[in-house]
Length: 417
Image 1 (cartoon, rainbow, N blue to C red):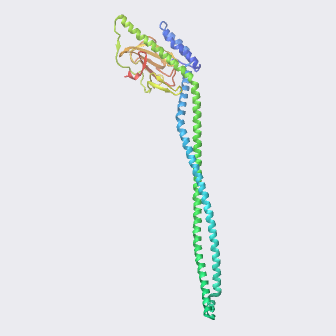
Image 2 (cartoon, helix red, strand yellow):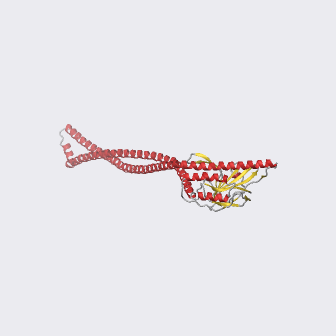
Image 3 (cartoon, rainbow, N blue to C red):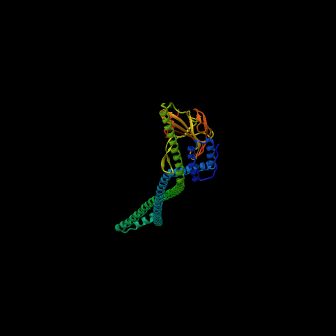
């Protein structure tokens, strides 16, 4: 089983990887197992460090995507909170103005009430004076004046005087009643003003509380936006730092894919020429492939958007989520053309199935913990060729399974039963 250590940087990884993927071409005349052992020794110091760097790249991409996804709604929440705060502050201002106006009206009502009380007091004093005067004189005095009249003119004058006094008394009583009614009205107005003040004070207090809550919400929203902006900045900076490393890794993967495609094309051409030379037709198989492992598909074949590089790249195979150490089986009868370690694909087995359904078909099994086959070995469908793992550019145990037609990657699901 191949093991790796936590030492070495990406530059070393790339250098070893470039040397590694060139090794299989030179193995034709050498013992494959000896060459393979040499490669194992070269990469032994790199594996876990690769895993850590993969996790770092994945974490940076996830952090950037997460921050960019959360920032717009957070900014919208901040804008909403600021609008609510402005509304609450306006409500508080209006409530304060209304309370001030109500208090002013209450003061005016109090002044009018006190004025009415003063008028009421003055009229009561006037009425009391009339009452005393009437009590002191009484009806006997009025009768004496009438009896002592010397002429009709005296009598008329006396009667006129008492009628005037009587009218004055009635007017005082009427004014007193009017003042009493006015006083009661002003008392009611004063009471209403007091009630309005209490209500306005409650409204003002509620407005202050609403403003405080809105301000706290806006402050929290602002803090969240600032946190997300800072997180995005850190993620962007980290992503920028990792770009060169990622580009280097992708270059390794592309170089390996190009190399393998060329190997397949040469084998297909060699098979064709051999058939032409012997005058025999190329033997072609038919049918589909068996699944190399039994497990769920965690990542299908297809284009993927890279959150750090901001471009699409092809995911060249189908990932099966299986635990490390799961037996990986040949999808079809074939010949092992390569079994080696690559910094991108980890422990890798490549099986040549020859011409099938009109195309030259090859399958690859990647990120293995270890393989159990050698170059040139014949395999039957279902035969164990290795065990799943997480070597190479991988962040967790799985099998990355690829199918190539005439040297080109195609969707494995087109072939799987």
